[in-house]
Length: 232
Image 1 (cartoon, rainbow, N blue to C red):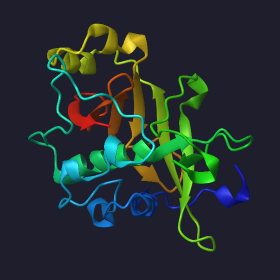
Image 2 (image 1 turned 90 degrees about the vertical axis):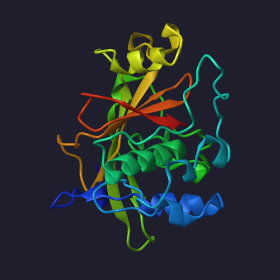
Image 3 (image 1 turned 90 degrees about the horizontal axis):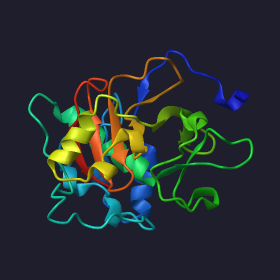
Image 4 (image 1 turned 180 degrees about the vertical axis):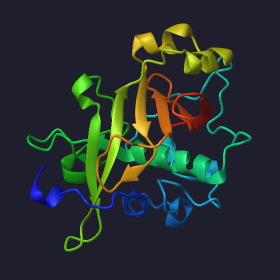
């Protein structure tokens, strides 16, 4: 890690407001919808789940086809009882963030996230690298060129769903087993919270996406339970 990437103390959770708002302005989406709160990627509680950038509102995204009658999951899930507004909106904001972020493949820049269209990156968002080495802390910067702030967040790579919790949720909505099995490598894991420096502690919130149908699931108790977040 270079001197410009020196770790900061004390370590703290950070928002992704600058990165999100900058892209939202490019996409002509009101930045107000992605105002965030301290303590994660949490969106304002005033922002409705369906109002943030979706697959179809972000330019250049290859979107999944609308679900047929045999796959009736909606474009956005409903906030379940017992999950706070901050948790739910934080997961939604994280999904919006990863929807526009990719992993740089530039030599020597292996662990750097880049937004769609940045530095010539044409990507589709949602890093999907299956290489075990891609499971790593990644960094990105916000702020002006003379006041850069470094952030760190984890792309978790392939999620195996060993307890079959997501698989059972998907199959209850008639998703075919071949498209809803962790053993087939269809799930990718992403963190919800960004931090001021890498650490073994990442919090308990994660989102998991099925790369074959765009369904995204959120867990707020470190894989103990999953909730349908929506489709990106």
